[in-house]
Length: 404
Image 1 (tube, rainbow, N blue to C red):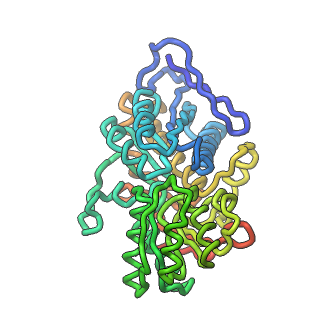
Image 2: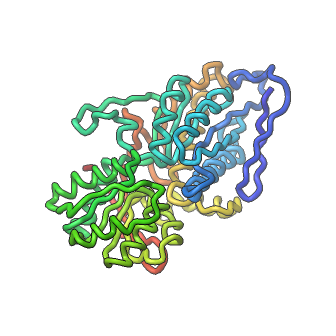
Image 3: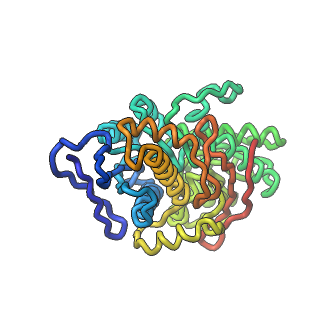
């Protein structure tokens, strides 16, 4: 029997295994005994993006702890199996196999990166194992590679997300910059990763449709830290802002070097919306980022989550995706609850298949607001927020439910 024991000390997670294999079947113990359900969590908990990854890990852990404390599903104990994907697709694929092999895993939360998700979707789908990302925004993940032409086809039935798409985020960013910030000329840069390139393309389509001008465009590598060459191009272009499709480890030094040469703001997406962006960039003042959802600090529905997270003593902040992660994890918990209730209080032998079916039907009031999924597995919550750095912190400027 495989017994996973969660040891919690200031957010730390330890997994131990013991016993025989006799009971390591598909979570069925019968006889009224308590059963264990494991929820896999995949995120970068080391490396440049670890601030976001640790917020994901901790928020999922909090959801499991809360469900156990409140006995949300009688007879079921939830545990977390958290794996570090290092923001690398190859590692994410290995982690997907580990989740699949653990028969107690009935759902996976994560990952952070759309590129990592591309390597995980097929194996998880082939295994019939539910995946819910709180952070992936690449539109093709749910609507297929031809979504831009209107030919939307869901590639994987097991994939869901509580974050909205780059189609919505890029369009929202373009509208905000053009209409609210009154900036009409932008230099466009992306890091060539699926997330960054997709976000930049969506931004460009809406910005130009509004009448904005792309003064120039360029590509960088996500590991680059010297941006003098591209900054020179930006300065010569006459652009009034830079839109960067990428994440904060490169975005922060790009912004700082930009302001050493020309005093214009840099704007990006949710991959920039992190406290670490400001820590890494002494000249972040005035920079803009969009992120999915409304700030949890402004939501009545998030007050308990924020209080419980603080009480739990996690040393790392919940960051941009904490609320969405809690809701993603709770979606799996709600699905398990429905499956158990329909099976005389215990898990069925085909628990993974039943949980997948139940996830597509979940509907509840979550930390971030109403939680439900459409026919593509996308969240029905299209709320977006624009933030600006002011006085060393991100401040919300505009929140609205947006559809391009």
